[in-house]
Length: 121
Image 1: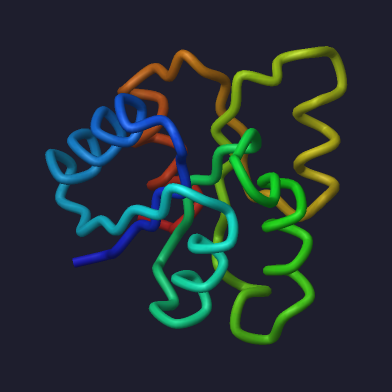
Image 2: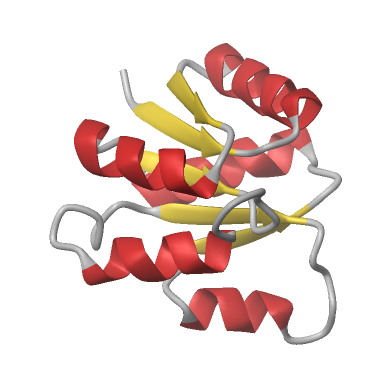
């Protein structure tokens, strides 16, 4: 069973996303801050990460940057899930090392499709 790490500070969003993942057959872990998420990503090496950008400590862009600079984190697929939906945001996050980009509010079907596409299922 593939494992996803959800780095999301909003508990309602986290519950929705983890339910979707479990229903689709994924194991999940949750980190409410960027620092905890980074630590968990490096220690647990999940099969993919769903990463919020607006986090209470270090933002998701910085988490992504640090992951991509570390040997243990550089190859973990990352899907940015954010309310940032301005022109150019998608391209900015993809250029920063994200494998995919999803806007909030999330579309449950699209989330699972993106994960499967990114992790090669």
